[in-house]
Length: 368
Image (cartoon, rainbow, N blue to C red; front, top):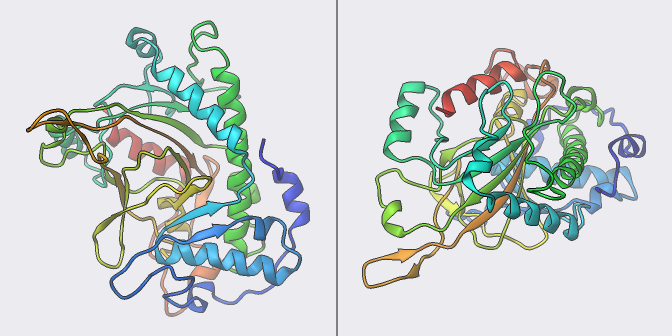
């Protein structure tokens, strides 16, 4: 499990009384986030400097580094985050075993309802995009569906919406592994949200009672090997360009690669090369709305890595695995502009919305 429990972390971390306007304090280029006027670099953050800080100033510096990463790029690499390598490997192994099950077994666990957002999603059913128009998305899906399959897992104690688990005899240890991994990721999310609060000049515990219901989604992803001809359609990708819906996404990826992030300063997509031992973390739409766009929800996509040549005209891409933990505020949490993210010079950009209203609306449009 994660080395710092959420409750323990709350008591250890110092509160902050400063109320200066955070968005004005941070320069546009810090931490070598932007390598030069045309370059682009996702910052690497050592989270242990925050979790084990020996002084309030040391903790604040790491918190500001995290906020600057989300402010300038929308993405960070999180290093020394407290999740053991064996825990991540175990989750990947059980995910691989699940997707190796026969289709008839997985299809019995099919995703059915955006309010639940649980279950198995077969290849081609989802088409991620920035569009909110269901008809437009249906046309995109028919033309160039995302070439991936996934398994969606939510909080297991929910009385209304139930997870769909394979039988233990068919997937030994799968359920227990994923339940433990879900909790581990929630605890890390809580720590990062405390750092964000501190970096935005809020009380460090500001988000605690707004994320404690664990209204999250653990998504296991499998990108099967595919012939290159299938990826030559206009608009085709393993996962189309999109932003995520919630507060943060914790992305665990293998070494195959394929994730690309849009440079918000040029509009070009550039590779987010896997760095062993790190977690890729990006800000989502609700965190951008909460912060009045002080923090970026950056477009990203998954493309095919270099293919192995089969003959003179055709190649085949390697299979890819990833695990995404989509962190969300509580379902009924009201997402309205944070007090330190607006002033006379920066008007509030978005109306209030609840987490459930926003996420369910996006999911309804995304799936067929």
